[in-house]
Length: 124
Image (cartoon, rainbow, N blue to C red; front, side, top):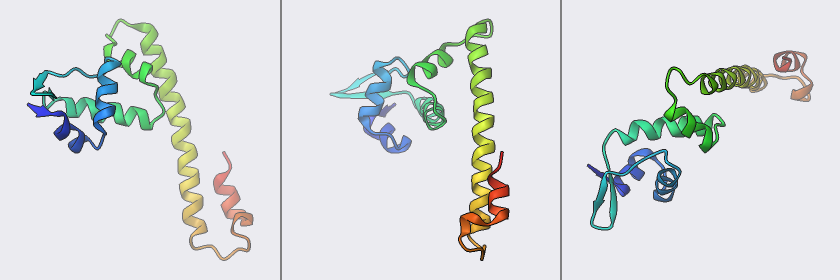
């Protein structure tokens, strides 16, 4: 069993975030050790998923629906497909930005943002 402080430290999340996720039904504690909530070690895997999804732009409500989804839940599966397509667009945009910044870091064009290659790399 891990207490809330250890889960917070290992996950990089504040204890208040853990309590918030528990209140929203994304986590469940296993009980208490004195006044501190305790969790099964597997909670770290769930928190990794939650943190990744949050950084990808998922709402807490979306994550909650995804965590409860079953194979026959076509509405949630459709939402997952839409979200996957949006993430593909985000990934492509971020790659263009990364590549253009890599180019600009060694470019000699003045100003850098007017470089034809920089502009080409940013174009969709």
